[in-house]
Image (cartoon, rainbow, N blue to C red; front, side):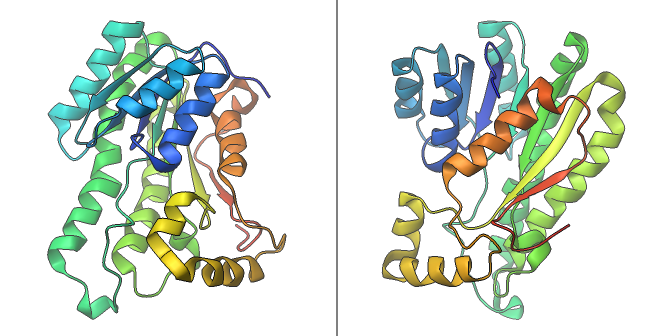
Length: 252
């Protein structure tokens, strides 16, 4: 599959998987817009080193005006928006505990970023996609949404909401040839996972892969292949779907 000459917005792209997606899409010859609450200069530099035009913005997806400004700047720079990847989310900074011990402020923050943030970004880009005659939105959900992750009800609930948002929005804007799909990964074997889980990472990955049909850890490349499909014309008749990239842990 190939995908080139698209204008692609990726949220939560200052580091981690978002940064990887940006660099890989840049290598394919796309124009990249990255945004995050953190400085995106490193990601922009990586995209430019790959030969792509790229710009970055500090954006707070929980703020509608900030999301709208991001879309407006993308249009000013590139003239259109073809793909939005809603990758920004709270996970690594969350405290995990039994459901009745979770902090209410953290619950609200999780919903604000993981759900409302997607709504804000979709509202920001859909007018441009509608005017252009189509586009693709890819929302990042999680295995937790369908498997049910204990001691992380705030995260699990937010990612389940992403699936519902994906389905409802796909019904609503499909008439404009805008496709809306979700990707739901398992734990991804990355450096960031090592930093977050520390010396528990190897045991976690072993336990995770033992539940997979394929018995192999999910990598960033596995996710990227699915995103290229959903962003491109190969999926022109695919919308409202959630694709599990989880090594065969659950089957929808």
